[in-house]
Image 1 (cartoon, helix red, strand yellow):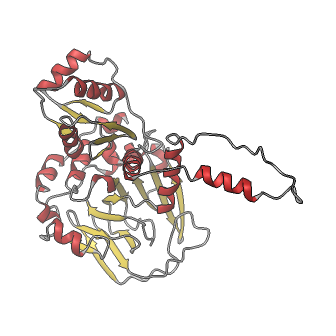
Image 2: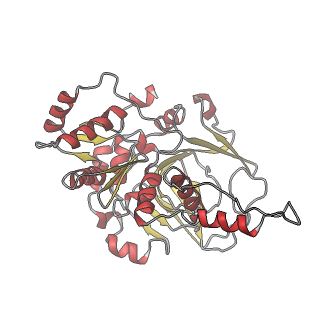
Length: 392
């Protein structure tokens, strides 16, 4: 990580400035028309969505990030039509593959490590934060790719440096190559294709088959949006409930009678258990609080660094008044009807504090606060000690 941190990131400021207009980002459509006509419905190619964009990293910087201990990264190689997959951690020499095989490296959660990447994602805030997954950046030399596949989520494929050929298909045949380490379609039939250059962007709805092939050394920025399966939501909701339900009483059968078949569960036992389980109740607020905690919960590999020499509560308050605070790059913060959710934790906010905390959730930053209620200051200070926020 040391080499990555001390490598100069070029182009970030110009890129952020170029992305201020959602009209430009969406090819002149505007957010409402895009959501109405394209979101989860059909693909959209946008030439020069971000004029002048050439990426946030170079290949060397991305590989350095892929070699960092707490980063999710994959290395996909292809030789004689067969794909192989390796997962991080990596060493720099793992990428000494020139001329040997076709390959591609993919790094997840770049927005957790690079402020310019987090700023890039802000320009997609016309999609609710609860739907955002992360920014994945991939690099591939000529011919590299991960094969034809489909994703279960929405994605914007923003081209950085170089050129990538995208082939797409609305095909319903999603049969996969048996035994392959990746979910590669066995019978991909391209219906449309384009070569994207720096600043171009392709939006794809879920389950739209696509195949990206590097025309030269190229980097692609994938802005992905999570779509949890209902089965997963239901399972995790039950886990959430188990620490929040109380069902009084114990099973009792003082009127027990002998049975012809002692192995059979009796109707009386079944009725009593059914009555007890039916006492489990939840309402809309329980579901909202579950969603807030679940959708803001950090992924298992994410950890927060507490301040080495923390400010005192008084010094923190002064800093908050003069400069404000910002979310850590890895923090996820959501809100709903007076409740604030940050990194899997739920907090009931005072009526006067909620708009301030909602602004922090919306903008990921709070400017200087001249008047800070004691309760709000205490909450923000605890988040600071936990590593969730930091002074600006």
